[in-house]
Structures are given as structure tokens and as C-alpha cells.
Image 1 (cartoon, rainbow, N blue to C red):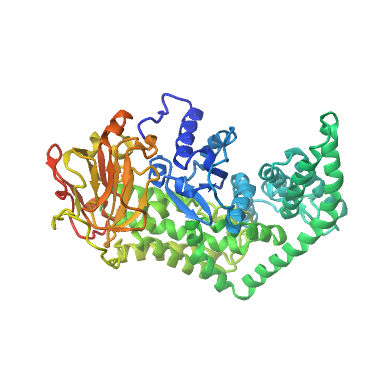
Image 2 (spheres, one colour):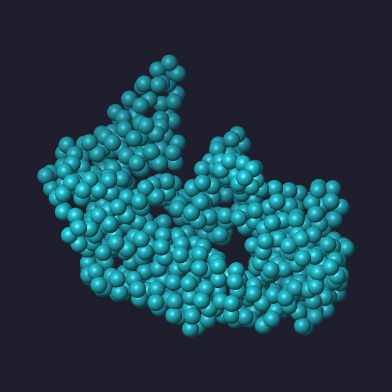
Length: 631
């Protein structure tokens, strides 16, 4: 994180996360630019009024950020395991006056963005309790199957109750998250969800679902009708808010329960029950008739959905399978996909010669394989190097096919991972399921190691008209000096994110002038909203970041006159931006220009120019040991 970050020794954990939340909120355009925010297990999902105000370069400066994904109408900040902490710190900042009221003209989020945001808002807060309970269910079921616990014994009954309780009572839990999403009374919503469960227990036939010895009734786990009911509740409460304040307290919940309660139990729940039952029957039929197709599609494509944050679209179907049938083949088919990406990251660690990349790859492999959090592997290693990600998808498809032929199915909602494997071993052919999991990892690992880490060669883009008086590039250098001045070592830069090499290898330049030119020829892949940062990718995949000044985001673009936009092609030596260095100095911002190689596959091959000397525009600044190293 930038230099103003509060260290863990100087502040409490709460203050530390509050500081990071304030930094991130400023980077996405401020609280007034946030229409809504939700989170899942590993990422924050912003719906912004004006996405162009979000500064990708600045967001990446936050230590915890793994990647930024713009997909489905959302601005997704991939955090990893700390997403919940950052979300909790952001919530009070978004509740302050002025938040969510951007003074811009923006259309409402599209249907896909709205659906993704709704699912993550409803299920996201319940993810870890569901996953924890699912692990208990899997290990208990495996112990019963192995004869270690008696199926009708006290231990199995108690653990079974604990494990399946959160899923069985999902209507009550989702009622609370839905009330927060729709801004309805939480405890009135809880009364609706609990009332549906009680009604279901009273009217269910003897064969209705049970939680150990306690009958749960026909509506155990049926969260869809409760969501619809709470949506209606929010609108009815808004209408009833016109009642006099003296009688509003008791009458609003009483009238709400009187109107919505019977509608939920007698109309909404039966209608949605028939629909969700038909959907579950369809997925069960698919898993029984063409299991190989389901295995290949989900095993090979699950991480493609994760990479775009679209995997949440399948979560309701997986939960519906568990509720209606007690198992989810879809969730089981995602397991080899996750294991394969982790194994591909491990293969990258074996193949790479870059110590930093190897550490990142090993850490990502452990996170992905053991606990199912693949974002560090995907964004830090596999996607930048291309081959590991493709290898992971191939391995996932192979493993998914084998597991599907073994009729693999999960008996609980979990994050697919090695520790969750027992959840998929309670039903189906244990040997084929284990072989499928092992094959997914082995195939992904071997492809990565054998093929290597070389990304595919990019086709050069058509050259635009020559700019006026461009600097003559030095043919021996991969990256040229974008400005004249004194070269300093990256470790001497007063910003720990750059000084510690987190963004990649490079150098700093204390500039003589304010004209900054392109250090390479290529496509402008990112520009900071505050005009201080520019990323350029060459035809061979080399990606270079030019960051002008330290903490210049605080100037909000003052003093910067850009000459390029994202998506444009520039030639080395063409003007990127003109900077008024006096404005930076008056604002207390160091004027150091940072030139950093951010493409992971080139990091170990960068040889910077000697520090302490001077360079002119177009002089050799960073040289690659090889044209396209294999990391």
C-alpha cells in the first residue's frame, strides 16, 4: 500500500482496515460514485455510477488487491480471503450522507449486473457458514460410510444436525440478507422466513425432509419464495410508513405479516416450489443421462466463469439441487476445475526461474488446491502466463469427465477444494472420483511443465501515422527512457509498493522536464482516471507501466495533460502526457517518474540501466536478457 498506510504495529486491526477501505473507496471514485456494493468469499463487487472514474492503477496499489475485473456491469475487486474484512470496513463509509449520489448521468445497471449483485448480496454473507457446515457434513458422512460412526448414533446425529441446520433453515437466514438488500425490517423478514418453516412442518406429510429427528417440512431450504416475499415486504413497509408515528411501531409489522404471510405460504411458496422442483429434476436428468457432458463443461469452464465473476449465476442452481435432491452433481464437477488451476500454478513454480514468481505460484497453488481460493493463482500467475490457465482448463475437463462417469456429487455446499473432497465421496464411485481429482491435477501440472510458460505471440497491430519528431529508439533496449533526468534505484523510491517490487522490476527517474513519452511501442491497456499512470503492452506481450509522481492521485488530475487514451496504439517516443512539475511540488508530491515492467513472464529478465547516472529521452533504460523468456 502507498506510504500513508498505517502499519499493524501503530493501529488496531479495525483502524488498519478502515484506512484501506478509505483508500479503496477514493480509488473507485469516492462514495458518491458507488451505486451498490456486495461481496462474496474472495471479491468485492461494486456497481458504479461512472466506471470511468475508477482508477485501476491506484486500486492495484492496495496490498490486498489481487486483480480488478470489469464484467457483467460490475467493477469487481478481487481480494482473496480478506474480502469480508474490507467489505465490513467499507459499509459504514457508504452509509454516510452523500454516498451513492454521484452527480453524473448514468444508466441503471443491466439485468446481468443486477442479478449478480442480488445473488452475492443474498448468499455472500452466508458463504463461509455454509461452507463450514458443508465440511462437517462431508466428513461426518464419510465417517459413517467407513463405519467409524454409527448412522443412528448420537455423534452422527448431533454432527448431522449441526452440518445440515444452516441449509435446512436457509429461508430464515436469507430473510435477513434479503431485508438488508431491499431495505426492509430484518426481524419482520425473519418472522416471515421462520413462519414459512413452521407452516411447512405443520402441513408436511410424513415423508417430508427431516433434520435428524426433527421434521423440517416441505419448505426446508426454500429460500426463493422468501426473497420474493421480502421484496414485497419492503414495498408494503414503504407504503405503511405514511401512518402516524404514534401507531406506526406495532401496526407496520402486524399489517405486513398479516398481508405477506398468507401470500407467502399459500401462493408464492407453492408456485416457486413447483418451478425449483422442475429445475432440480432437469439437472438430475442431465447428470444421469449425459454425465460426461456436464463433467466436461463444468470441469473445463468453471474457472472461465470464476475469472469473470460469473460463477455466481450457477450458485442458486447448486443450492436448489442440494435442497431438492440432497446432492449436487454440478458442484462436484467444479472440484477438478479448481484443483487443476492450483496444480497448473504449481507447475509454473517448478518451471519458472523467477524467485518472486515462484513464491507467488507456490502460494497460489496451496490456496487453490487446499481451500479452493483460486484467484491468487489465476490473476497472479496462470492468466498472465496463459499456458498454465489453459492447462488448468484442460485438466479440469479431463477430471470432470472421469468424476462424472463415477457419478460424483456433493452432499453439501462447499468451496471445491482438497479439504472439501470428502463431501464428494459419500455418494458415487469413490475410486473414479479420486482418479478424476488426481487426473485433473496431473494433466494440468504436466502440460504446464512440458509446454512451458511462453505466452502466445501477439499479432503486431497496424502502425498509425508517425507522430511528429519521435525519439529514435535504441534497438538494443526493450524499454526506453520516457523522460530525461537522473536514474534512481526502485528501492529508493518513496513508495513501498514500488520500492518492494510488488508492481514489478524497474527504475525511477527524477525528471528534467514535464513531457513524458512512450517508452515502448504498443497498445495503451490502462490509463489512470487521475491521468498519472499509463500501461502499454507491446506486440510481444511485454507490458510496461509509466507512473508519474508519488501519491499524485491526490491531485485528481490537476497538472496533467494526457495525449493518449486507453485502447490507442502508440509508438515509442510519442507523447503520453505533459506534466506541470510545479503543480506536483506545490501539492507535496514527489515528481519521480516510475518505469516498471508489470508482465509476469518478463520480470526475471529485466536488466535496468545503472542508477545514479543521467539518461536522455530514448536512451536504453530497461533491457531484456531474452526476447521472450520462459519466466
